[in-house]
Amino acid sequence: MAKKEFTYRGLSEEELSKLTAKEFAELATSRVRRNIKRGFRASQKIVLDKLQKKGKVKTHSRDLVVLPEMIGKTIDVYNGKEFRSLTITSEMVGRYLGEFSLSKSKVSHSNPGVGATKSSSSVSVK
Image 1: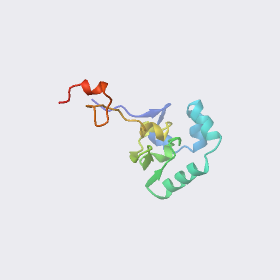
Image 2 (image 1 turned 90 degrees about the horizontal axis):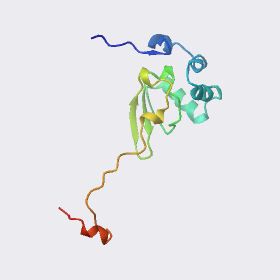
Image 3 (image 1 turned 30 degrees about the vertical axis):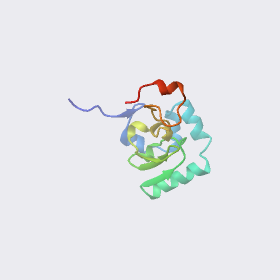
């Protein structure tokens, strides 16, 4: 079975990579379009400039929109505890970096520990 070719609003990956940020904004959702048209903050501009010069960048900017020019680059995004490495693919275009570096993890509780309350001492400890 052949793999389905990726398209973003009718444009292939090659056509998408040729677009400027303003041309991409016209295709994007309203929230992303507004974010791009208002302009990027200084910290976001620094990340975009470093991406063009280098292949790998570390950033705390979780609210940076993934643009078509970022496809194939590697970005380390801070999640509040550590940097998570992301390789940007075409499916990520039009989303935010923070969506791919989750800041909350699943909590799994185990047996009561030292300093537990008296009510939890009745729970059997294996």
